[in-house]
Length: 174
Image (cartoon, rainbow, N blue to C red):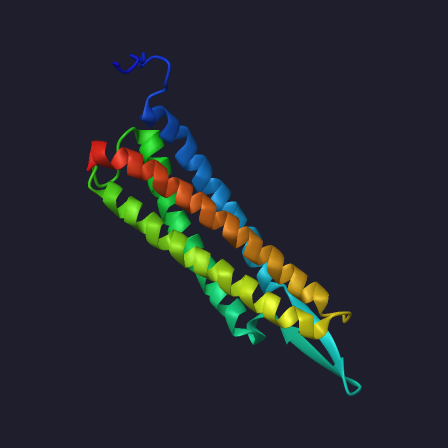
């Protein structure tokens, strides 16, 4: 049985989809990273132990420091890629030619894995430590860290989707 012929006019060209989707993904990724950064860096709590106030900050937990590092790397990478994408959409040509598609593809792969490990570290330490402080005022601290890690997980998904779109364009450009 022969495959059904498909008209190419039914499907939009991949350049049209990527010229709209790529900048949108980059901007949403950047905004999500910034919100995650703000939530994480403003996360503090006060513990009352033996009639003393002990201030707990996000940077007192090593996993949250790692999460911060992945957010900062993600912001730097996303800003770079957003600039490349905006240049490509506005000028109609790729900065550095088509050879940078491989950089974009592998960069998105590596960055998505880094972001995923940052989210996993944040979730892991939150799940491990939260049961020790049930019923205390520090639960708010762990809830905010979970929100930051959740946003980081969403950013991982955006970056992975971007990598998939680049993998579609890679054979045509590379």
